[in-house]
Image 1: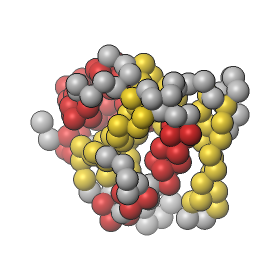
Image 2: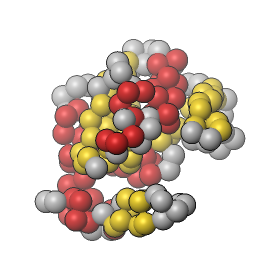
Image 3: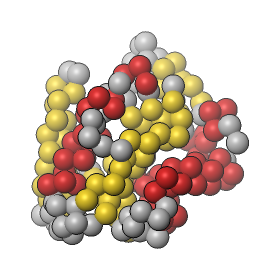
Image 4: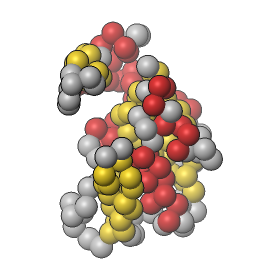
Amino acid sequence: MDLKQHIRNVPDFPKAGILFYDITTLLRDPVGFRTTIERLALPFHGKGISAVVGIESRGFILGGAVAQALGAGFIPVRKPGKLPAKAIKKTYNLEYGQDALEIHEDALDKGEKVLIVDDVLATGGTAAATAQLVRSLGADLQGLAFLIELLFLNGKSRLPDEQVYSVLQY
């Protein structure tokens, strides 16, 4: 199945000059959604993954389904102030400013095999911050899986020591 044909291109969103790849049209198609999850999970079957970390917010949709496919638990990484229990925070730089992510301090066990899942790898800042959070808890990060990788933004350069897998490249 050609997943790209189910992704809607939205020009000038969220601002002029940006071409946004809208995956909601892919997710609404039952075969497209199932195929997406199968392809995201495929390289990680048999690796002993016990937790999938999903990055807010589309990473929750994809990550939860990938966790189910791998027989793993699901852990959310959220914007500050959204998690109910004690959390650790990682602040990271954006092109214009800073952002931050949090994970519960007891979300992962030392040595636990973890996969990070998100919808898009762009500049890599969010993914790198999430990888640092996972490693700071002592977990064994097995890789990062993305539905879409925007090759022209070279996000992999911010993840030089990680196994990065993407289903689609633009």
